[in-house]
Image 1: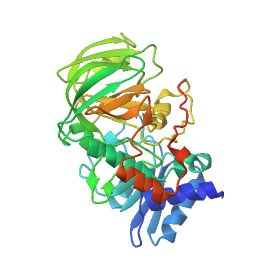
Image 2: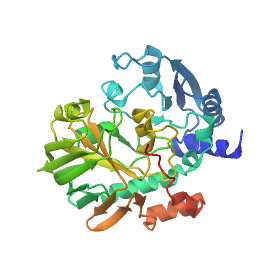
Image 3: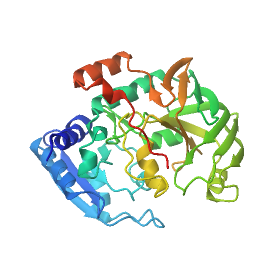
Image 4: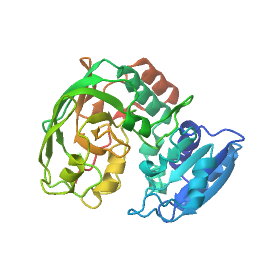
Length: 346
């Protein structure tokens, strides 16, 4: 395999998952979704680090029956110290009731092909990605003011609330080493809890549906939606949003500038979003205080925290923060790695 492929595997196993001798590691793969070369390389790398590695595969979880998780797969999630997951049909919402206080290191791996594992996305140092995310976590302290704007008309503001949020807690559980769930290549910063949200969100994309027939405008007052215009007025997007409690629970943006989107939005909007939302060029809001919110996304956002710009037109602007600067220097990565890979939008 190429040097870039080996660097991606090392970034995943060593820097992201931090596999250690004596750990029980599972590599869990949905049938037909990952290259055997990637599965074998992850397995070999973890074994080289002294871990006891088990490989489990299983059929797709039926979309109409999301709770029907194959027993061997569910058992792996329960037994693993570290778990590498290649299971796009197994959703976080289905796993949450089984593991509400998750403490294992779970690594959902999107670099499931040799090509993606060899890319700059997989090679972007996870230590730097983590530093970007934790710096944004620190800057987003409760009580600070935030504002999000976008070229297509989003202009929404509020303050940060306490870290306890129904959706935010379901997305990430903290452990001593950071997030129990470490998306690879990833990634996004922790969801920030939105309080007193006011303004307008103009959605460029709504996750989980087909193509957008037109942008959707959400007007917000006192933290919740008061009107929805555009999009699909008689369709499932409006129905899904109308079925929530209307509150903007939380939001977060991508933090890996080298994110690659290997599928066209027009061909598969759901899969396109699963990749693209890792890019700094997207911010998405969680509408509805439940474990299954509706994700409403905007492109090329500018984000300000207490007047300081942390994203400008979709690019991160926090490279001078001490934690980020230190991680970049230790990693030895080139300055060009902080430049966004263009995101396909069609």
